[in-house]
Length: 262
Image (tube, rainbow, N blue to C red):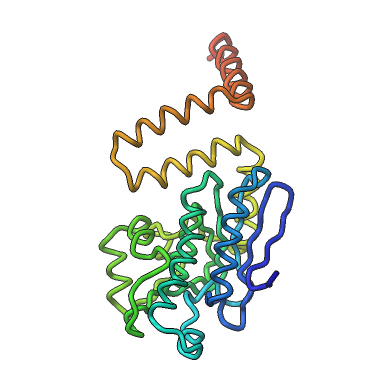
């Protein structure tokens, strides 16, 4: 067991914390393997209803650990193999039916953008900053950035970040749709979001996330078929039946109420 990513359970909430603050939480070889292993462990656990992703220190994630790459004697094949391991973890979270919220307190750079966008809902601090910097050191996007970034902010803005040495602040990230909210205490707000999911129809939130994520990479016909199957399966659950019955009863009561006096 290592501490490069901390894993804690708070009831049905799984909290994953990047824990290499001295390296700005850059993901090295060991941390990448831990990320993949935790992704499989968490998403396979039926007792996990939501995931909160956060980080220690002044930065959320500086992407891949370029210093480790440069000093470890690694070659291109080693870097490709490690990218594939980290990608396995990203794909596992994105394709799962477990909703993920991220609390971003500081800088996000390079592949950190892809790791952040593994989350379905991102809450950022007003002090958060976002930058690419791949081409500055002669490297190309990885960790899902070439797919997840344009999906979040559009191709034109994604190319602007990737092809210019530009850093955007939290307000711009919110305006562009890179983050869902800006909050003074992103950790507390992210926890509120996670507990909202857990207090409600948790499985339905998870399936909604899965449908949206899957819909981006499939034909429309396949999306419609998946929606039909999913809503039918949800309707047969005890939780949905109870909630639907309560909604119907409230609707009948509202319809039967006399109009207000004027």
